[in-house]
Length: 416
Image 1 (cartoon, one colour):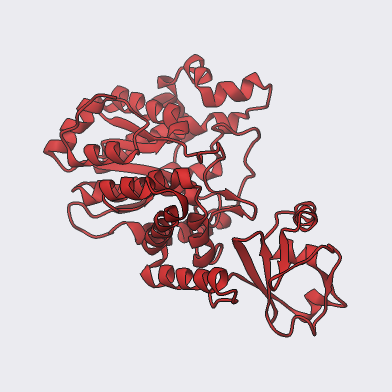
Image 2 (cartoon, one colour):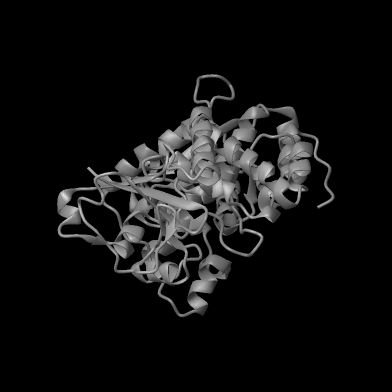
């Protein structure tokens, strides 16, 4: 891409690696240069927390606001009832209205860490598409909106085509999702003057549908911009660990575990992730990313502190670093390790090491726990343990016990 942007926002995101594609680089850049642009990202309420994969576009909205524009975080209270089929092998489980509302409330707490919601010209808006989707009249919607969509074209989108090519069922319910998401863009443009939708590159087809619909119905020019779907330098999907997703809500993943996720970044990714997930100046990101040998740890600790500070606060980041130093450098337990608290009933006559590794999140399954033990990767205290059937009774757990999986992942187990 040789385009030279005029606006601070476009220059920033291109320099920091946020840009995968845009429907009209120059058109969007010119609007950003001369006016306050409103843009949105949609987040379905399918879980009780967002995860690290969502953080790229939350950070993108943060840069939008910091460069003088207006972000919208759109919670999919309506679209969650349908489920996004994009690049999925099967249909999402349907949630109850109560589950969706509860999830939506929890997502809001993360957005407020990154964005300022106020009444100013660049104050962020928190919206829910149930506001306009829940009350739709089906026949009117088919007549006024459905007529603008070509089934032939919808079938050509990669997110749908890949599912059909594998002869996997795509329900009519899911097929409607892209129409509803397109309608979101139309409504946001009509109600709030929203000019752009941001999303991961897997959302390209949905975004383009919204642009086409809005041009047909309102004859307005609007834009779409996508970010790359992140993988680590060794090809793994960003945000997955042995314990599962890297959640953003502290009650689903402790600030210490979140800090550790970033501290364990591979050397080759440190500079790139500093640019994407922090506000450290680009030249400093590049300096840190170019370090080698033991010095690269400086970059990874800086990354962990900066990202954790944004999400959980600087005090939580400092506490996590202090715990890591206590555990790794001094062989201690630390004050901030993730803790599994068991009741006397949980322990009963005894609970095995394999079960403790799984329940503490250090292994995803019993099979993985046994493999960890067989490879001398499991430790109790600081001693390697080779017996997967090692039992812990209430007396042994009367004081906290530190479990370790490899050199970098630790947890405490205690009786409640």
